[in-house]
Length: 313
Image 1 (cartoon, rainbow, N blue to C red):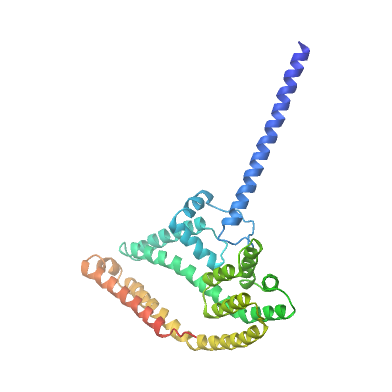
Image 2: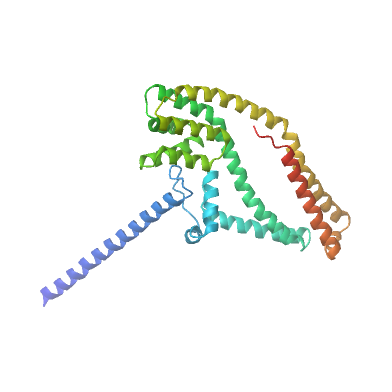
């Protein structure tokens, strides 16, 4: 009887230990799997993974399965931001709702939906601005990148090795982007595909020229030192020209945004001088049509000024 009791206690203790070990192994494996999914799926930036705890994971997984989520993911990949599609979507919704309520409280209820649409446009405009900013920084690093590749190939290194070395020596964003290229080459992708994805992710004339030079030289099997030397000088000249053009057009670009800001300021000033003027103005169809027409005209003015001041180099 005593042996049966001891055997029962021992079996219960053994099963308890095995159960605890199983739960621990399951939770540890699930945590590792989730960390791997986050690293592989976070806007394609495995190199820049920071280990930050991701928010809204369930929403992020559901959003990635949709076409809208994939589009957001591709845009975030081009910006280099450490944000998941789920996080960006939640932040965007909060911003839209906040602008909606603020516009209703400060101006009038008519301006709530308009402010919400402007918030939605501003969210994607922010992504485009970050993308263009990253492209501009990458373009400024292209002369140094071309110089490093020329020195590496002149020393007898293969193009794959030269790209990996450039990824280690250059700072972001060139270092991060070339790190992606090096990782793709390490797992079997061709140089044409890896560099082609880089050109699609950060489109610019300078990068297209560099990628075309590297791809053609790799296909033909010839030396790329002379081409890269000449390309380095050309990129340096284009860099200085772009800086001068940007300086000359800075006043025009500021004017494009200052004029709508003055219109909004005049509207707020009118409501201060005549309290309730905005409510009375937007309370009729004619007033609403006038407000919408003025906003459309301001938008057309900004678009025209931006187009006239845009110079392709």
